[in-house]
Length: 425
Image (tube, rainbow, N blue to C red):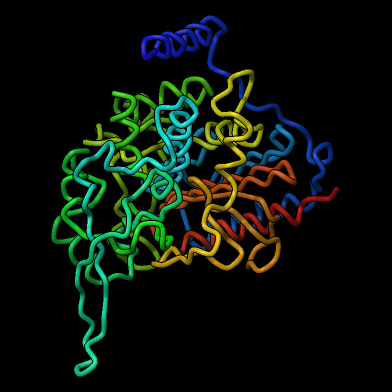
């Protein structure tokens, strides 16, 4: 079976070469053809240029597509503030957590093949996760001191928990659980600079921050899901995603490393973050990673990412290539939390739930920025983000490169607000 998949991937490459290139970009259309006001769309560029002028980020690429066609695709500011080179529409960005949707789609492809089940305990693939404990806080009635103790998990972590971030695995930099944060730092739990086996070994030494299935907390779940994909498929995560997602969709600039011949297209942040005056440190994507981090390790362009999102919006297929069934896409982009509450510094507002790799908007109202119930989205810590609105048949992508942090949410919300105000039909 694996040999057949590899043959299919090779055939896709061969066809691409024979036809003079990879899959074509999405077609374009005028704003008025797609229900936008040309005049109102100019507000997008005006706002982005204003943000660049006040040094929110060096440059940006903005892409808007509707009904399968690109209505707006522009670049602004600088690609590299050190050299002063201008931003280009084919700029390559560090995607950070925009990697998570790739990993989620990869996992659901294995689910569709019957090689993975949502209810599978993670320990079926990673035995060291079989008896994880949970760190529980309590307050001493006499001293008022907070104490922590470890208790047995009520149940094991499942594949669904990894996909919807209810595993109890967290990020040390985001969690509000003081003890788990302390232990993550002590054991060196992270996603950079370590092999897959080292990452799993360190995670297995630390208790969970929550009982599995009890709380949404954003964290290393997607990295562990990537490890499961590697075990089930028998190939590194980056290879699986390349062969099964990037190549079939013609995403030629998407990868887990930027090759030498493309380094002049890599977007760079300010060397010193204007907001903090601290050096900006982003992941080095010019050298092979020790592991293909399923939660944060990829790079890509706006033109590539819109192809991935159009595949999702089309119900799992693009240009005659089907990656997922329509029913699976609907399942992934529906809320999987229900009444489960969120925790940590990446908490979810009342209008927002979470599916399998994507945040999902449950209400048109109850949120600080315009949108539609049923839309799904996610973002990367270093300044990239996307929104998909099935009801409007709309895709919005903003790519910048800046110091990682929650402040980037402001950039994405401003962009989205200006996209929606330009809809005229």
